[in-house]
Image (cartoon, rainbow, N blue to C red):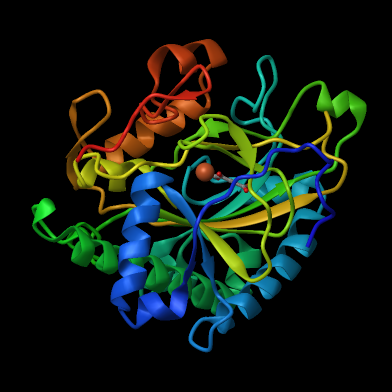
Length: 339
Ligand SMILES: O=C(O)CCC(=O)C(=O)O
Ligand SMILES: [Fe+2]
């Protein structure tokens, strides 16, 4: 794990759930899951169980891959750019950053879920060559993360009972097109000059259903709905962070909260490379729900609109409230779960 934060840094407190208990449909743990999603919109998930420890091995292997991949010269990585929000490489500075006047400071490599399901996967022209060379690793990681978040959805369906019109899993039919994606992020160490241009990852809620996030270094912050202020999320060995995204909130009639979060280094610049790995579960593209502006939209159009907003100016972002899914205004939580 990373070094401790400076004294006085505010740390978030939120529940830890056990992956094995949820896989076994433990009734008490299912209720804990529902409470965590209603009160915080995020929780930590213990992966150090017999059924899930292979994901910790896959996490280590993906980190080793990322070290080698992101160390390559930019001109090599730019060959993997696909100008897509679900495939390929994206350099730093594509979106606005965590503070005004600056751009983001992370580069990413994305692999969409479909590689785990399509038969002619090796022929997909969207896949970067480095990914093709490591397909078994990405299939294991994506397959495992997908299974875990689908389990969480099934548990929530059980807990919500007749409060929801249809099982949450039914909006995630694997034969339908979806933007579900695995993303690998590096926040490169930066010089003073680079820090004047870019910082972290702008505040947002995630677009989809559940996000499965792995990080061993500090930097992630949540806008706590309990304390209504920004708090650091302490990295916890062998645990994933799970966020409730906009789509899950909308599909449950706003009964859950989605987590408002961002990435910001302790100091004014990134002193060491920071790595994080995410699997974003999102509903099938043609799923329809009522969004935070009370419009009926498809999951695909919400996804596309939100990515356009990531790239919009800070001014436009704060005027429109798309980036934080109607959960936040001026760094304060303004949405509360409906009964
Ligand atoms: O890098 C992280 O820890 C978080 C990334 C994130 O929130 C996102 O990509 O949605
Ligand atoms: Fe996020």
